[in-house]
Amino acid sequence: MSMTVVLSQALLGLNVGVFYAMLSLGLAVIFGLLNIINFAHGAMYMLGAFIALIGYSFIERWFGISMEIGFWPSLILAPLLVGALGILIERTMLQRLYKLDHIYGLLLTFGITLILQGLFANYFNVSGTPYPGQPESLSGVVNLGFMYFPTYRLFAIVFSLVVCFATWYFIEHTKLGSRLRAGVENPELTQAFGLNVPLMITLTFGFGCGLAGLAGVLAAPIYSVSPLMGADLIIVVFAVVVIGGMGSIMGAILSGLALGLVEGLTKVIYPPAASTVIFFLMVLVLLFRPAGLFGKEK
Amino acid sequence: MPNEELLRIENLHAWYGESHILHGMELTVREGEVITLLGRNGSGRTTTLKAILGLVGRRTGSIRLHGTEVIDMPTHRIAHVGRLGYCPEERGIFASLNVDENLELPPVLAKGGMSVDEIYRMFPNLKERRASQGSKLSGGEQQMLAIARILRTGATLLLLDEITEGLAPVILKSLGKVIHDLREQGFTIVLVEQNFRFAAPLADRHYVIEHGRVVECIEAAELEAKQEQLNRHLSV
Ligand SMILES: Nc1ncnc2c1ncn2[C@@H]1O[C@H](COP(=O)(O)OP(=O)(O)OP(=O)(O)O)[C@@H](O)[C@H]1O
Ligand SMILES: [Mg+2]
Image (tube, rainbow over all chains, first blue to last red; front, side, top):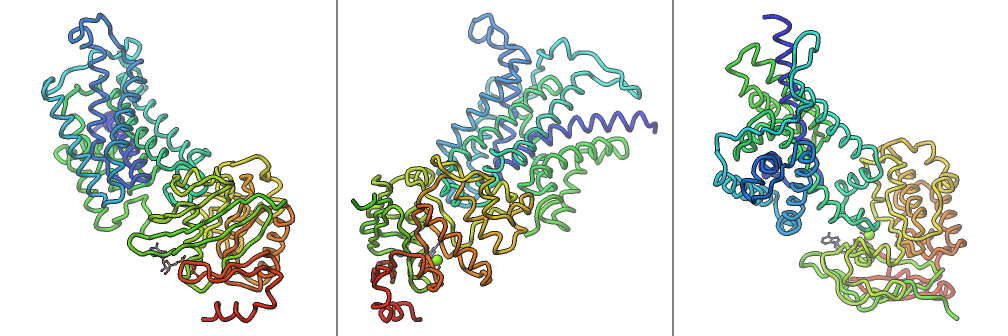
């Protein structure tokens, strides 16, 4: 087995890893502040991809308006729309459940997932529709010295890494971020100081959903867009979150990246295990370090 | 003309879930006054402060801050309306924030608050620890930080809950000086205290709380005459 094969699988693994990282980051941020396990996260990812697809290929077909929303505008528009839907869900539904056990939030978001999936499965092919809007400037391959790598995938890796680390920086090193952390640690006192914690919670949920929508747009040119794309991914992402430890921002990012790499490399070493290696690691982590690799043991 | 009433509480009842804790609290604090809430453990002093801030399950009656009724107001607006600074019972230092972040967490409520530099001049030992996590501070340092952070906000009415608890005598002395200085500067202060010796020389008036209501109100000047009654109320 040549070094090139290993490196190229590692890069492809990293490519998957950045999607894990972005999604588990959103879940960790939401869990930290709302104490809710957002099962609808995968559906938000799917929705982001569909907004890009519809904007590019379906506006004229459906509405008779000759208009095409390209990849770059979608990269901004889709997260905003998905974030706005998140805010609506939080304000009208989740807010009523905070006093109850988190299982209720999980059940509600699970229901929302099934509704969204069913809605899209009604109009789109379950086996996937290709997204033809990948920009010209990102087509082709780049020569990395040891291999040729698709330009778009390289862009997706770099862009996602920037988004992940910017989010981490925002939460850990800015004034607004310190207010969020305070709201997580002691919401009552934070409010008593005069900070609007319910608003912070709503915006954070919107932001987390927006992040999933952004990942969806980024994924659209690589994987085909399908109503079940989120459902397939979210199960793995939950495993990533369990391995990293609930609530740790850096833990979510690093374990997402690392597990993408592990999965990619397993494809080289022992291909049949590639799709299960993450779950195997999850079981080990649950047995030996139940709070997760980066989580604080209680 | 007497000073403006910053806080007036009338017929205040408060509940945690089903338990009815405050039973018709009444008290009034005018601008520039220092008052104490005295009482045995569990008498409802902390609950009174929490009820002012809307941190109890349910509350009825009337709480006016600068003349504005806040009984139905959401918690995050009350500090702004009343220009309140709150130092909670267990100090409430955020473990996940460092000293600087803790200091800068409460939003500015009004002009006239101290600058970070002034605060660090008042509490030089905090300055040395400004990059430490809140969880790494000693009890005394945490207490200083808990008071320091509400001085930045321009709050004029301070609600301080058991700020002397668990502090060494040396620190107690400098804390006494801090409160004395704040009083001189015109702050209005509600002190919840166990340590009567600490509170007595600082306060204009003492409210004795029992079973969630005021059973005695003693002006500083009457203290000697009513010492015996006070002892009876506070003895365990
Ligand atoms: N979160 C809560 N839920 C239910 N009951 C509570 C809660 N907090 C306090 N209580 C009860 O309310 C009563 C008053 O408590 P509070 O904390 O106001 O007392 P306190 O006067 O501050 O006394 P101390 O701080 O010295 O113990 C007590 O009987 C206490 O058991
Ligand atoms: Mg108390």
